[in-house]
Length: 360
Image (cartoon, rainbow, N blue to C red; front, side, top):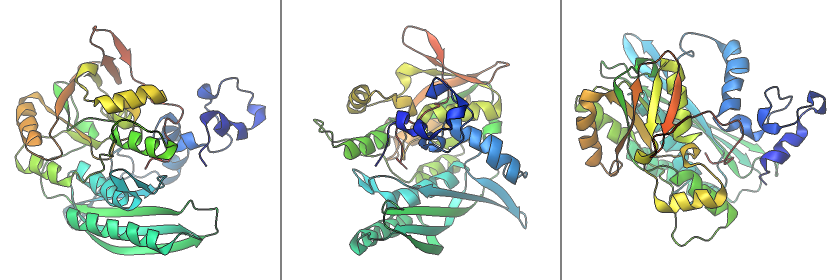
């Protein structure tokens, strides 16, 4: 059962003597917020994982590692999926496991080729449920044009696995000369999104909580590699791409801003959010900018390529509502500003807590 953020902090060493959970920086135990993709995840990477595993290939702040073998550039990525519930409007954990890893490879400009699949299954999971998940993975992998070529299965005691957890790793090939990386972002670029945000996280939350709304919100869970390669093959110059998963749009922008050491200004009125998602966010006290998506991406391109990029997106089934949401400006500070319709700006920060745990 999921616990509130307040309960998550009850296991913190009492000798730390902090008065406000939001301000905690030195945790003595791992909390759900450490997996949110926000500030605490960033701290784990910077303070524990990064120093332990430091190497040139790892230190890129990209969705995939870029490797060179016999003069051929490859992309390699891995991700784990712990979504609860296992089935949700618009998808399931199996579909999510394939789309998430394929999309990460695509964001590096790689053509996905091969995936692995690792399963940690809880004792007592019905065989027909596992079969349904595996069939979903098979169908999605076929759509993506990838093969699952290796895997692993472990079973844990009842009560220790929440049904099933899945890890997928992926390898793709980079067949073009563009360098698509956050470090390539520069002043004069524009930020383009392929559609409305917040659907995935809200669909999960509504299913989990049993809320009844007038209209059903479907997850946007979808494969982005087709759209990406239409952009690349058209000759659009792409400086950076990022799919908007954990931490949502805001966190993705902040990460890119830090890596590229640039200032980004986002126009709040230009960020597409459908009314149903807005209403659900207001009801649940959530900010759609930080809600996860599984079929949304941003492309950061030079302004001269903006119109072409938009035209291609509009013709694609995953780009029916694309928008220019912001720009990259000259500045000595790496930050992301959100400007509202009144012209007032505020700085977007990474979340310290967890808005929606266990959504991917």
